[in-house]
Length: 354
Image (cartoon, rainbow, N blue to C red; front, top):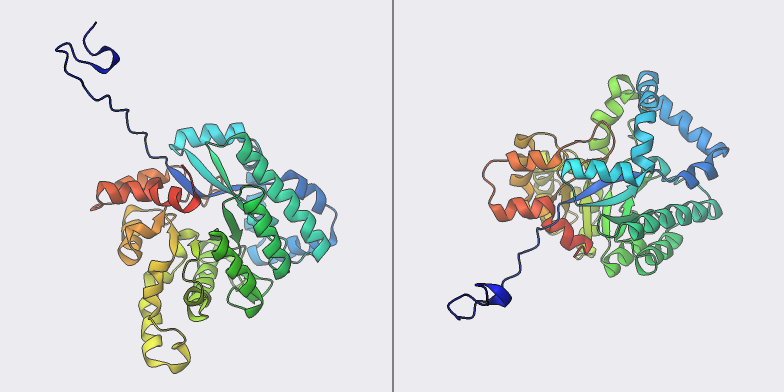
């Protein structure tokens, strides 16, 4: 018998055949799709026209014009899985957690319309994931403006459609995420083990940020900072200790200036709404890596821990990154285990990716 055949060496001594270890998948938790059926449904709705007018006012004409000029390049990436898969291969991303573009939240929709939007969107995400089960997992959208309906939609999305969690905005038509009306949603999200991805749409500072694309450059991180602060000071994280909440854009500014919140917790009685200082709750949250530079990512990791950081690209938009793994690779001082966890190990665990 030739040496090594059937697991034996030529000496006759048995040799254990060890299967090669599978490479840990790289996972991007921040990647968007556009659902054409939702766009068709909303095309002539007067509420959509009002929302677009509001976005134009808040973003400024120059930013709107430039954004529209980019749409021909964005659309194939947002709607064609084959284009997306080729881009993922170039980026070195094995799995994307896909979520709708935040422009498709439509939180102003009435109950009937909201039900239609969510059925179309979540069905699209489920079909994409089913067609490419090794490459995509879906994050649902829900009608949080109707909390009881959102609870049903989240349950259906995860238990029936096989989606792994949900993407929500930083506020729901002026209602903060710690509002008592949303308690049933948080309770069900914890019960289901949902991966809750918080991604803003615009900024409540409105026209103050209209020039120079400030609505996105600083506005979206501000919104995320506010939303996370409401979850902390409003006691949501204390009441639901098993929640899995991940914040886009590195968590906004909170991880980089949480010490001011800690000081307020110490000296202001109205800020002492929870047992621990705010910085302690950063270790209860997860943050995507979209802070652009190795130094920025290293600082985020120093504040929240390598175990709390996952890769996010914001595919396919220009405020995202084409090579998020390169930034992770360039961060100094990480162990191989920490780097592997950020590249995909942590996200795979949170999203139930084998």
